[in-house]
View 1 (cartoon, rainbow over the protein chains, first blue to last red):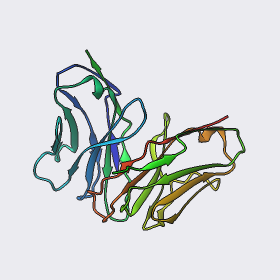
View 2: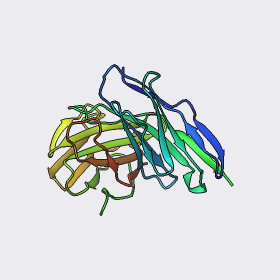
View 3: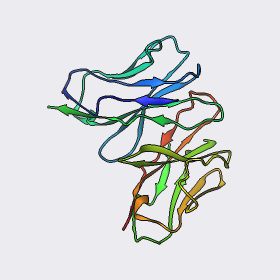
Length: 115
Length: 116
């Protein structure tokens, strides 16, 4: 079964420190995409970063990077130099392409950045 | 560039009433998705369209829910009659779908529906 697991319901990090949010996935499909979205308290879903299953290098977008370990089926999000505005829910999601266009989401991790 | 636009942002209605949620996808995107978010079930797909054609509606809870996409720039999700258990945040998302796993979906701000 295709599944995304985020085991950390809540995380705390000190401002300016780095934090890693965990995501593991389960699939037998060789082609898939992994995404991270941020949902602040205002409610919108903001796309952060994408990693393809065939990508050789880990994805990076500004302060966001994705630690992709294919053999372990993990795609952890690393946020460097945390800011107060990073406090939000973070969702890991997976897409398989083809006719199955929808995203499968994890349950999310609530990140709180402390000043 | 305008993102995905949803209206209304908040809707409060009474049980039994008809509710219509609206979505305008990003211009040029050819796929549109409706998701529902609840505390109990998280984010789940209701239906998605490709080139205005419904591709997968297996997530639509029951016959009370219906969705249409009459053209590339507009979609509606209708609930008739509404029930309290329909209370949730409904998201619309769009993508430039080419059938690959890299297709990135961009979400609208959501509609928070409360059915009393």
